[in-house]
Length: 312
Image (cartoon, rainbow, N blue to C red; front, side, top):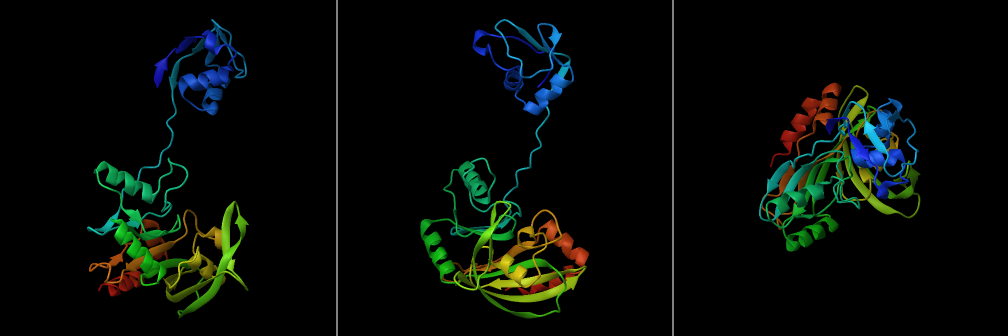
């Protein structure tokens, strides 16, 4: 909207409305933008400048905006495109963007991977694939969808039976000696931080969480880890890295002191059993923020060597 000398005559239906509410509705702007007009002397009622948004309007009064009014554009995040790694008659495999939830939420306007897939297939006039597992909102990497109810059921059974191999990469705080090992913990919800539920290693109860780990490279006060979970507990890798006193870079919920934006955890590789698919190895390239941190560490070559070693 970009017009000069906007003016209205108050009808009986608007009598008694606060000036601020009236202008907000007519101009389709926020209270903040209306207040800018009032404070700047840009609003007239019956030919006199009016600065009080609480003023009650009367039938027949004249309200006008002086000069040119330009509606401030709302900043918008560009809609991400689906980064498709593989698609066939059984599966759709994408490289999930960090910061984007996997699953649709109660907010129908919120952008999610599942919602993007549904919208894309709706535009094609095709039934939408079914989300088969989830990654945390900030975790990037391989995300799997099934094309039919039958393949979805079989694949989710394989997840439950631990037949699906997953490898994650994490950039963690600190530089431990190059080493490898196995973590075995019992995890469960512990409390809330900033309204978000966090999990922890418990002395009793909880669910068993098993992970193989290897420190692949170190540099600039950080380390690159390969993580192979054998279970799929909530926040499993994030909790276990924190328990090892090397929280994932940017994961402030679990004690990270550095980094901004998302936590640097990437689902780099997924392998299905051959009973599900003959094309069963899926590898997700790193996203720019992860790669940039590796360059800063001087560890990009270590990642490239590791990536080539996964080629079947």
